[in-house]
Image 1 (cartoon, rainbow, N blue to C red):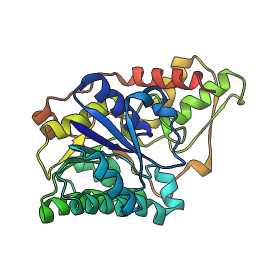
Image 2 (tube, rainbow, N blue to C red; image 1 turned 135 degrees about the vertical axis):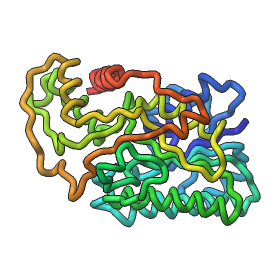
Image 3 (cartoon, rainbow, N blue to C red; image 1 turned 90 degrees about the vertical axis):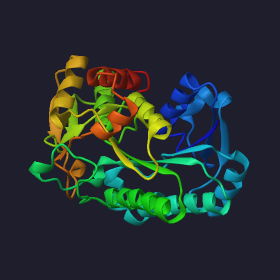
Length: 318
């Protein structure tokens, strides 16, 4: 089996590659890279994977790479995935996420290929949620509250449209928040963990800078999340959409408290206005019953363990 991961150098992409290499010995792993792609997350597996230069915004490069790879499965994880950046660069976010996906689909169709394709959506698609809509189900109305969320809604609906119009074998997942080792330091759990690690090494004053601590998020360990991604193409129905999450939401303040407890630090917590968003989603909480019923998936790694592993990751790097 030939498996292509777009975004293989990223957080989830690198963990998915690890999972496939460890658990699915019959699979060959391929990935797209650009000349400027950092390879820190995949350095440990470079000799076991195959990398091809391609850019989602360049359909010519996509067709060349796909014609050589001939994938049986594609996990489409590549994206501009940081919500605050989407406020500053909305056009770029939409170009990478929505137009990039169109290019990928068109390249697959032009080449006459028929891979199964997983589209990694986001819980941010739900956006403005009313109290009677918690936890979120797949048929909940989508009311996105950021340019990033709008771009993921576009990805989601394009995957459905290409399935209905051209029979493309797409499966859409709406993954709720996930964290763990290798998470970029702009994301909330990782940012807190990195700040704590810097404080421990006397490289930052004993102050944790924060944004909105009242938001509630459903966090899954990335290693459980990529296991779910694999199962989505193993057992998911073409054209369908599936929520993936634990079904438990934590306030951001609770996450900070857990990390500070793990570190044993006594620090000041200070709100940084630059970390506040123009609009924020108050709660994201999954109902993943539909996905669990067809796959048997359950999260295995406790959230506290995810945070401990993340903190240790940053302690080794700062």
